[in-house]
Length: 176
Length: 230
Image (cartoon, rainbow over all chains, first blue to last red; front, side, top):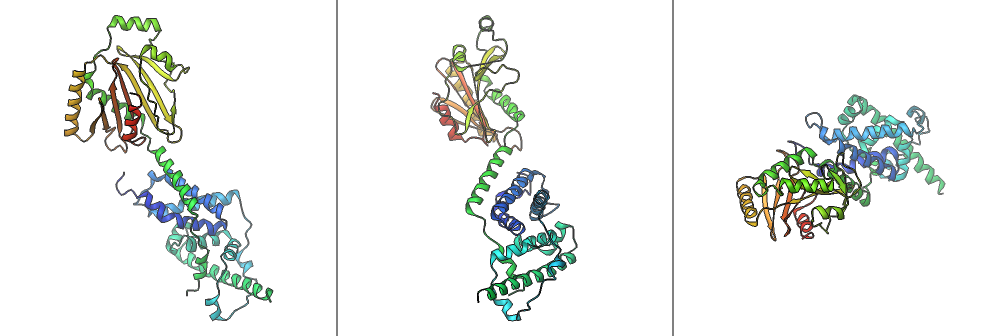
């Protein structure tokens, strides 16, 4: 074993969940997320001799591979995406502030809402909330500035909250 | 509750079966990547031959060898079936083969019309039986050759091997029944896997030598394999 070589068993245990959830947020499909996760780890295992701990933390190295797997997937299966500015034109129901803390959002509805985002916004949300990466690591991975990442997250989170509230309102009125 | 907590709710734990299957496939990948290079095997084989060199004496007289080679046309490596090989070198074949390994013939320019290789090595006639694992690409190689050395000479060689094992950490020696074995012979400095060898001589003076890598099979499996041929 090379000096400072990671414990690859520990890498698998620690990062399987984050990588899987990154893909789950990106593709909103369990089986596809599993396929892409497998592809990521197989590529990582085959190229682990090239990993240099002096250049990047193992997490960053692994998610670079995952990001490329996602890009390759969408190159072959390009989904339709609309501008987030168009989504912002949808009516805003403006619920009372306290109710925002009490509402539980349905997991599948959230996945469907994320799937409507443009590709870049999906990627940022998946890395932040699926893989639980820090803003600065997301910025490094995507070649953006940390400020840019914060801005994208702020706008996108606000949009998703509006979207989820709309769906809750539709459900509430529909059940009456 | 932070304003974005709801976004973490999409997370799920991966399915246990998926985790198990992926781990298994990565372990297979690990075995494939750790296959010992052939060069290190050759180096280790030379080292093993050096260690046991005191027990090896030219098997037959030049006249006998010439007769055998001429009669059988065995002046080059050929691939023949096991039954024919037994006429030349009556040897014992292991009956217990580790799971996943199958007979394979792969030997340079030798004609592939049998399941083992026989040919001349110096003044000696040798046979080789090879098993290969289809998934891990691991190999087990058995070589057989005439060995006219006496039991006393082999006992002296074994004593030398034990002495080496006491003084150096690149060799371990063990015995099973009447056979001696070199358990771990370091292939190359820093190598991730070592060569292991088990040898014995039958009553008809045929030396059997089985070798593989410590990355491919363990000591107990190698012993069971050798015992199944005795």
